[in-house]
Amino acid sequence: MYAALWRVLPGPAWLRILILLILAAAVVYGLFFYVFPWVSSLVVPQEVTVE
Image (cartoon, rainbow, N blue to C red):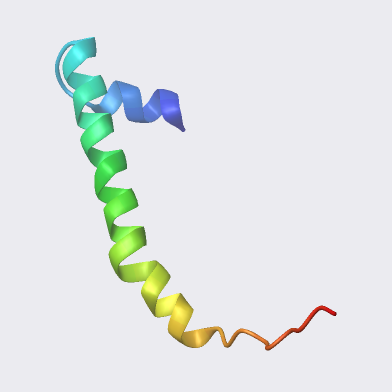
């Protein structure tokens, strides 16, 4: 999968690395600000007391 992604991206190696870093940052941003809050509203934590 990663080799196919590497072949599809345009430009020299430094540009491909830059594009991949931007894509990874966009995925992390989307997870933290959209996916995780949505999942958090669906999961109800249990009240657990350890004595």
